[in-house]
Image (cartoon, rainbow, N blue to C red; front, side):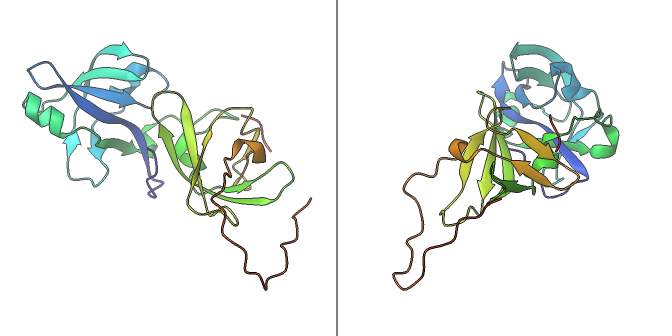
Length: 197
């Protein structure tokens, strides 16, 4: 999950458990290339309580790497870190190219559908191994949050300058979890009526 409110830091990955008996750790990486997880200097836990100087060992499979850090002393220590997300100061990362962005930049963007109707806001980014998902909260008349596959088809436009992201209404699983309308309330009027990735 990438949901830090502190825009001065970027989440590079998350520990995924121990590997072997010497304290090496598996790490889910959110970087474009696997080795980049260790390319920007020491990383810190989300709360800033722990700092790790990572050494990249090898890629285990796409999105999962093996790392070593002197701050991790044992297999038990590595295993206890499972789920801890790792951050680096944004200023240490290269500036994105034109029409590129960091996924963390999407958090807080207002969501609209293809007609321009308001559909809430991006509250987090997840990667469970099958591609990035964006979490949308505050969808009108919908309880809870919804997850949408972050693909060009489902998310055709992103406008960072206007802080708006377009998500196809059909990509949002509305389901039956709508808030019941008050019988005395009139029906809601339908709303009507960037940049490429």
